Image (cartoon, rainbow, N blue to C red; front, side):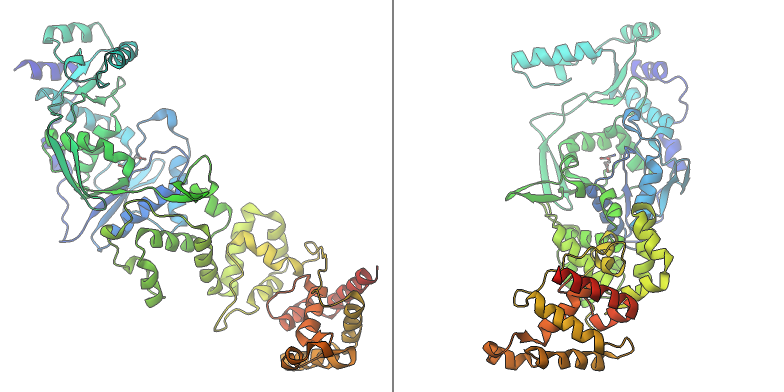
Length: 552
Ligand code: GLU
């Protein structure tokens, strides 16, 4: 036994498995050509950034073939940042967007798949086994430096102008003898396990990133920490071990990890494994006063995935929007294939933005409006009620008190060749339907500029005597036309345009007065249908309130 082997046994007396054992436990996956293994690897901090959902979607899109695997790994090595129900939140967040991993964590204490555990906190023995193996080969060593010693080193390096860090001649524990190490371990001194870097700054690593293209960086020279003093691995080490054993083929992650690539490449090399392919995603950006900046957790509510649920954005709309950010040709593809499943889209890493896609909420709104306009009234009703149950008690009560009435409102101008696109999200439904409910109707009655109050009253009083709720649309509109001439308006819009000086206005103005009296809006869906739903009694009541307000 050489000294490295002795040290390894001293540090990890209870670890009796070898990396080769794990090769047997987690055999190569039997994948067909072109199949990929991707993973979404969030830390359970309770906050999900839209960028996380985006990268998860890319994982899902990349794992396109039927035997591809897309698994969920919970990176819970930082217990300080962990929030107790975060895993459920991640899962329900993904489910809300219709994303379900094929393998991995399925709950706080449950999972599916043969490559687990999928929670890093349950993999301590595995990391220790690989750390032990590195120690055995002389690629890792225990470091007994205290936090104070490390800060003192940093300060000294700042003063001397040396590059900061624990490396080379500054790595005090790198060259301890076995007996020195033994003494400290026996004395119970806490230690981390560090990599004994074989990197050379004058050499470069070269990675062909699937999104960014060729990345070249100097090799890592830092003796980075692999295991912390509590034996828990750092992200760098855990990800290398996990992505190897879980047989990940493609690591899709935020480009903040590019700076760590030299460490990761080195770790895969020293562990003796082929590194997976990397796809580093640029952050989602936002225009702020003409400047492009990252969507910020602190400044932008729309940076949080929960924002979309709170606002009641249709999940499909959000995902379709993210697809346009992923590959801008998705929009044309969608136009050509309006009914195909989005995952049939031929996604390409190469077509992803390298500088960061710009988030545009107006575009998201347009996509959502379109999606909602194509839903049936029943579907809009169900979604609205589901959303309102948790977010808007008043709307929930109004909608569930008289379901047929609510569905009647939502059915107006729907299922027609060019449906209206008024509703952006479920929270917008209240505003859309508000004038149907006296509880929400507080009219201010803004008349078109060319109509005075006396004429408005005359129009309504005349119309009251002729309106019949049973009239179908053509009869209904004829009655409005018939109001025109006696009151100095013309039923003929063309005629009005030719000789406006001869009239107070045209039939459009007359119907606008009726619309304003009933809805307090100048633009609504089909007024005849609205009136049928309101019913004669309510209509007459509203006409009276309107004339009283005009006279008052
Ligand atoms: N847990 C890491 C994070 O949340 C994952 C990075 C990765 O996907 O490898 O940033």
